[in-house]
Length: 217
Figure 1: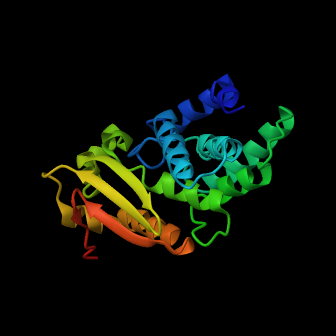
Figure 2 (figure 1 turned 120 degrees about the horizontal axis):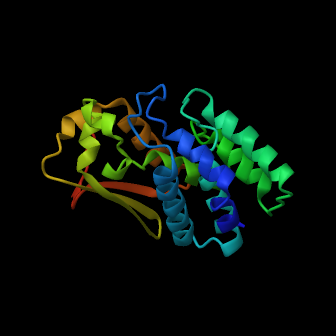
């Protein structure tokens, strides 16, 4: 079902509209398929580490696939539009998946639902927020002070070891750490990381390359 939805021309068209360079945020970052594929990939990697079964993972990937389908170049309330459009899409296409309600809830709450009790929601929030690798930056994003420091983030790895979870940021030496930390969205990234680990009672370690990242802000 995931592949069928992913290849639906309607869904593809929605994400082409999401990356409209005339969107309200000045098209700083990608919200289209480039971003979606990153989030889907991260959701799958996280759930595999937590030993979820194939069906749950497939349903969670559908949530990741559709979480920004209602963005359409307009950030405000896009999570609600995405929820409403996905619900209608499921109804019109007779899509009845096992974790449908959890999928819909994850989409609706993916923007700020840090206190959710749904594991799928928490995983989607986390995967969405930590998609700040250089591949996320749109051309105009390189001109925004602070945001343009993301161009030095090559990768973000998540490793679960028993009762500990490690977030390893692989960052180039030219990155201005202070500017990156002070940019407003970095705070949301760190909040999603801390919220996720706290909900699961996991010890948290954040690494800046191979050294522990002591957050100064």
